[in-house]
Length: 198
Image (cartoon, rainbow, N blue to C red):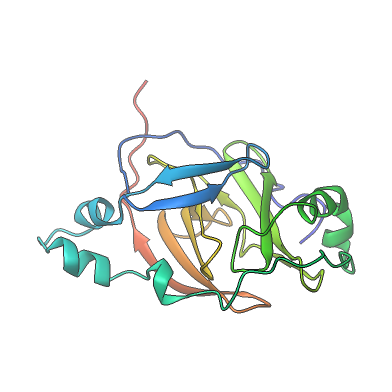
């Protein structure tokens, strides 16, 4: 990851009706403001699949926040942030500012994001316990749906992104498990991409 995580600047997209439904605390790219985002996983799956299924079946087919619990919530003194790589040093101001916040992801981490082009965000998590930085699994852009593009909880290691990852993945909702040193891809639920009408 270099100085600009979205160098092509082709991250474009505008919201249309393709909602998900899952109440979560979303740490959005508009600053350090916590927002409650309403996503509808069951509605999304109804759109993404052609065969009818029950809400319970739809819910069980995708990873759930409670399936990836954080062991505890860190409330101690924040560790000094560790900036080793070029990418970490490039975004040192944002990462240091994040390290001053309270944990909002996976028990001991602050998840922070910033823009990387039109309708494109990227970011990282900072451990308040160790000071170690881990970048998100890629840039997130081009979400043709309602709701935020990034969803997570303080008490869970599950990260949910909506849109296109790294400008090349399938358009949809992507599920990742944070293992402590990387984001492990669990599943992608495709969502039909409908261009906005002007």
